[in-house]
Length: 597
Image (cartoon, rainbow, N blue to C red; front, top):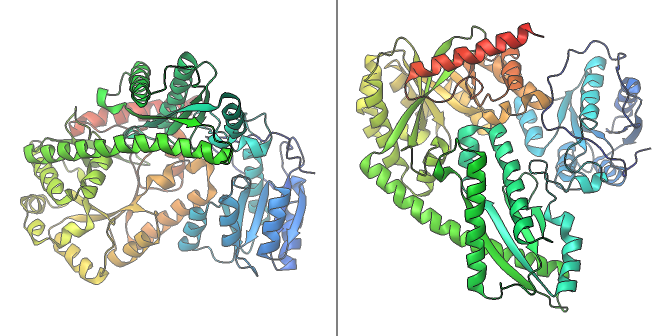
């Protein structure tokens, strides 16, 4: 019997799976008998799957349609649900979406079962939050292997929030270790009644996307954990009885709730001064923990508000209204920050103050350098030290074309300054740029045609391509000049798959969203494998970006990806050859680790 009061352990980064030997070779049992729900309108399929999972010693529940499956899942909270995609009343996709959208059922592992296993279907399952995918007809060992892996994920090492009932542990933010607001809401209501007022400080990490994009998700997870610790330490110093909570699971903002009665924080000006002081102290604390980050990379938006108890209004509403007031103060600061960034970006474009860097791309099997991605950032001490943030903000400010022109001009200047040595150089360009006649006669295109075979254009589809036939003819103009084409973020959505089919690129650049946590998600593994197979069919090489851990490196290589890129191998460098040394050091360390196994 499934006991909802029993703590269930989850993992954040799972070691690489060992090869599966036999469905009967179950090494260790789970600490309690797991519950498995099989939902399929075909009784023969139900019986077959029930027979297959016997080695796992599960309590098996069954459902004949989507509505029944959803009702059972909501009442019994099974460990794993196998959902037939095509069911009466509700499809498996609909049930999956309903389960993953609600906090109470979001941690149930969902396996979609279908006779259709093409890339589009798997992408749909991944986007809806499915944990795995089984395609009919079934292989007994594969069914047991995949369900066993999902069950074991739920019984790994304890993490913040474990040791409490599962329905409550889902309300803890795993990254920072802090409870989320719903977890402390009952205590907040008591505080409001007892004290007649509550003070709120809202803390939001500034430019968190750029930190994650520049340094990777593993670094940012550590940054987020330390930020939570710094917020908690500041609250203990300033407000001894304060409650600290993460805004959302996996978010980048925090709340401090404190007893304000009897304090000197009665005036709005005093709240503003306190918020600014909290901000400065948090920045100082985080600089001490991350000295490698430049001064402008660590920042916080801080807003404050006070809730005065009003018995005629529901307590929850009073708390959330106070949170909104504190959030509004932060949003005002963010708007001011955007205006400042727009002025700074205009100055960067006017003065052509951009930095061109080169990140190595490595052959997965040989371990040698294939080439480099050419990256453009703002000046070292600007607010735009990350390429993604720079170009994303330029699009928002309607300055994308002006920035692209400067970036290409400065990149060309750098490329002329050294020998290309037969290496490939990849440049990321917006798809709509190719329609600009000015770009087609650009000095850079002439330079590329003089060095046939050295350059690759990475196409991004942030604006949809309306006519692929016309766009294909535009690309052929560049191919005639010896310039190859890559599709960026392959596997990020069906539109990119359509582009692959229509444009026949020379390279498929696998999005970091598929690479991240690849070792822990079978659907991602299948999608990467399919992209590798697709690349082989159309004669395109696959390139996985965002490699940050040894698990990601090994999985991509073993799945047959041709080329690898990421911080695990090398960081962007001022000169191409500087990255080669870092690649060699990384791969030498990997070889030593393999020998020690």
